[in-house]
Length: 135
Image (cartoon, rainbow, N blue to C red):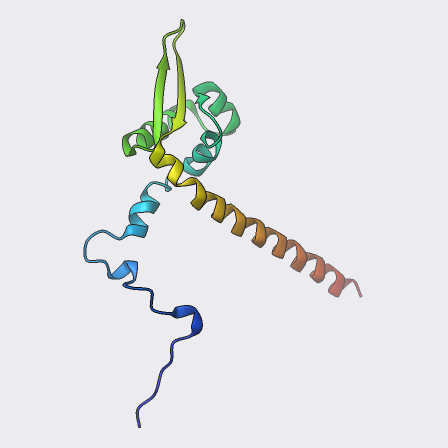
């Protein structure tokens, strides 16, 4: 007697899985642009408008100038951040997202939406736990 297996409704076949990709996995490739210390915070802060280095550093409390400079250079090398030196005295450096960098914003918006749902769920569970243990 052979065992019959059925796929759950959530696991419908949608083509080859990323881990089955023979060369580069598209998900891993995209995540390469989102990984690294301070990367998500940098994307988020550059999403509205270009920002000067000093302002970005003030917004990212806890990051050193050295680490922020290194991370911005990495993101510039990846082609997601643009660095513009203003011809002023002293020179001012402004950072912005490139067109490629802007492509990641809907992904970050979706992640933020899921995160907000998880926070609300956690708060509801904590409130229910308090009520259950109060009686």
